[in-house]
Image 1 (tube, rainbow, N blue to C red):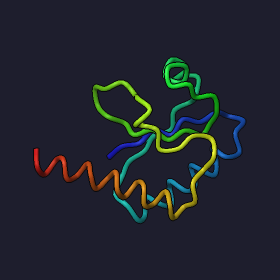
Image 2: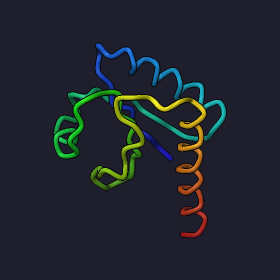
Image 3: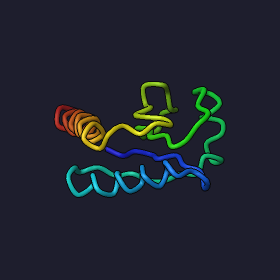
Image 4: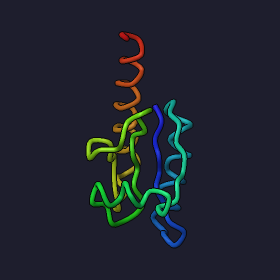
Amino acid sequence: MKFVLVTQEVCPRCEVAKKILRELQNEIDFEWEEVDMYEMLDTFTYLGIATTPVLLVHREDEDYSEEDIVFMGELPRKWRLREIIGELAGQDSLKRRTA
């Protein structure tokens, strides 16, 4: 499972989000990449997002939808984010095994 963390340079919450994701990678098998908000302005406009950080589920060959937003703006607690990512990563691996 891969996630995209959308950040901007002057965002203190973005730094915290990056730190939490790095820590969670030691506990859960998932990938993430950081993308600057300005690279995703079209997506932000389409989804009505006006704040960072935003964590999106990355699905190959698909446009982002509201269902792909894990969080935006306010960070969930680390334990809750662990649960969310674990569930999503588990669903992804289940899909691969049954496909």
